[in-house]
Length: 497
Figure 1 (tube, rainbow, N blue to C red):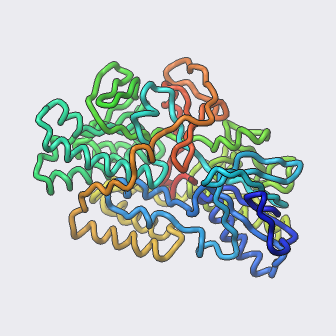
Figure 2 (figure 1 turned 180 degrees about the vertical axis):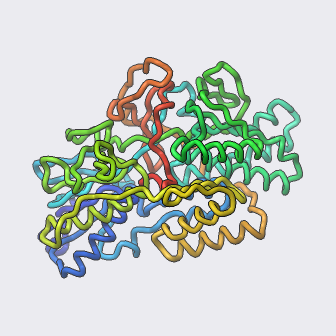
Figure 3 (figure 1 turned 90 degrees about the vertical axis):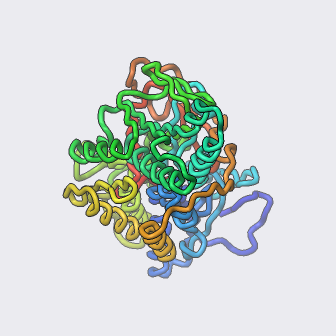
């Protein structure tokens, strides 16, 4: 195996067999951790496991809304690869292409240098990216919630605008500064809105203005909030959101986004300086470059997670169309619950392909979901039991503490939860993340024809991609949002990346 940059020469002999894992999301992280343990127990010293990712951590995305709301420190929603994945070599870089004939992949490191890695077994787990629509001004003025940088920016942006509004003598401009528009009323959008509402309430109390003057507008083309949880819990979530003064508008989305206002598809105008876009995800753009068979943009795999026709290549997570053996004819949804468990199956089957153990098909039934709606409230359906209020809150927080894969992270998040019970939230804008750090920037653009109809489906492989800080963002056309439902970060646990 040769690592980057290409001019560097290895100092010692490489192991005979190389396993390369692409990505560091839930599936990749779990695969690397379990595979290293299996190989260590088998004393397979001739096998090297390498994980290549643009970042040096696994991000626990279900808690990003808590970061944006000032509840949880961003450090503790990230699990460092160093020290956590023992026996695994981590390489920083974004994979650009894969040569299946030569068993080589190329990647670009953080300094822009191109390098290569050879592999005997390849695990494709690049995860998902934000799906962005071709709405005028959206890429310039809106921000997403796919990374800690974006979560921190949203927190700082909300607080900054509230502070500016507090001293702004122009009443109309002050009202716009106190208006936050969130697009996407599924799991992530609803949680983000609830947490930002809690942050704004804390700011109102500490800064001395009326909390009712802060306006939140939650938009979605769907006909009810969080359809994934079912009508009963969705209605309960709607009641909670509206009881907290959140203006929920269904059947509506953005038509235009400007620096100080947005225009909706019903032609109404809302003055605002803060727009959050949490309207769905799509598989990593890498998948479309591989020349392999896909299904709605996701790489087709067998039940044992092997890519058909490529016995040395495996895939899982948000970027793979994994057959759901518990529901014949359907694929497993792109959630962290499935991605984590697919990672375990990946580790077993990759090891088996090297002669260590036996293969196993992926089979997992959903254990339910949890949605945290801010102070004192949540909805959940663990094992099909519908819960709301304090019982759901307890289940939601207990699950997150259980699912975090590192003790120090669990400890820190538990302390944050406890602190939130007895003390007010800290209200300050740190300024660590600039607007440029969290902005959509033009890159890897492929022009997409206009969608026809109010809820047209855009094929996931036929999109426009832009680089989104450390992550990537895929852009499609504006009026397709109603069909985009691939987020679910808290389906007992969240999106893979």
